[in-house]
Length: 239
Image (cartoon, rainbow, N blue to C red; front, side, top):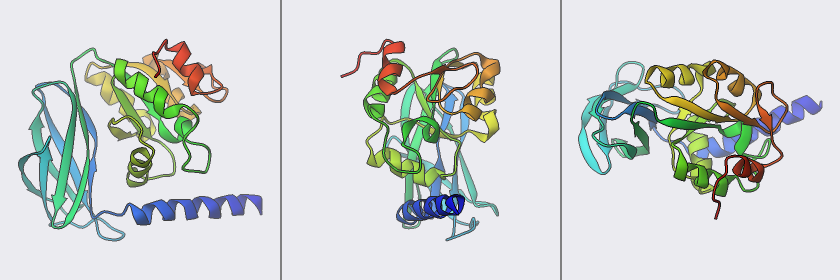
């Protein structure tokens, strides 16, 4: 009975946020290397399934880079080359529906901090951030590029909404995909410097030898009590 109640509560929480965050076009954040081409990706959706044959306009930092027609799977792509490093805001529009996100452009060798959202940033089964998480992550973002990871039960739209509503540092949100996100970063010549999160995320990054922090006991990771302790161990200046 307890398991059933937890499942119902979780489902209700997802539906609560998903309804409010519904959009017919979704942009998927990305990381790229400076001066190298990347295919920006958006997906057009109906209320349940992907919806193809829709025109999507892509804009980067407020400037349109053109339009693309979504295919049968709802995916629309647009080629882009980032001429400078840093965080670029990407907006997409399909009819009256809009979405936005981030493209992080880096040089080879850049050191990234990956943060598992559900495994470290929020209290279990709630939309309440863990104490000091916002200010510590903002301090991290001043020293390293930050990438958020979606590795749990909540979808991209729900997590974007939670990040924005709770005023977390702006950073791309990528799908973990059983650790493929780390392999792709490594192939780009990027360094996985730190991983903060839960067991499955940390274990999937093990071969890349990052320094890992977890709020539970995980082999190969340093267990911490709270975000303040992470800040101290990373020697951050927190304001």
